[in-house]
Length: 126
Image (cartoon, rainbow, N blue to C red; front, side, top):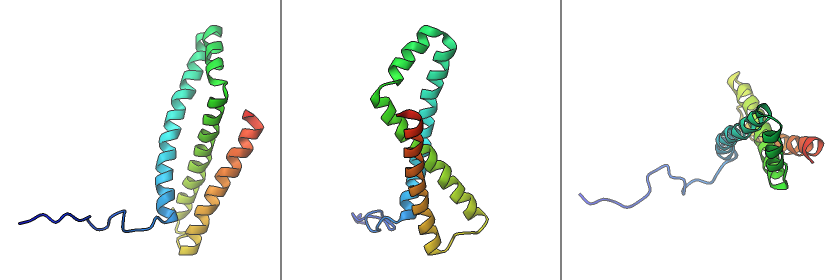
């Protein structure tokens, strides 16, 4: 029997990305980014506990512009993951499951995440 070289259905090349699928992937990616951010936070806390020299070195390393931009991205991940988690909790009680409602809630989550992360970063980081 000959093998047919074709994509299996359903295949990602066949379907146009929808907001729910994109936000689902983004939710998983932000969860991973938050986990990596916790490692940096742990390093900072260990440096504080290790004494003044270790803290000064950590502060010098984590105080640059590149780290501040990474922190801005981490803040977006935090606020997005928080807002999308609340969105899922609302879905769990059976609200917001109609087509227009879940699309609107998805865009609201993205908008909230952008505004909250920029606002927090301007107030605290920069």
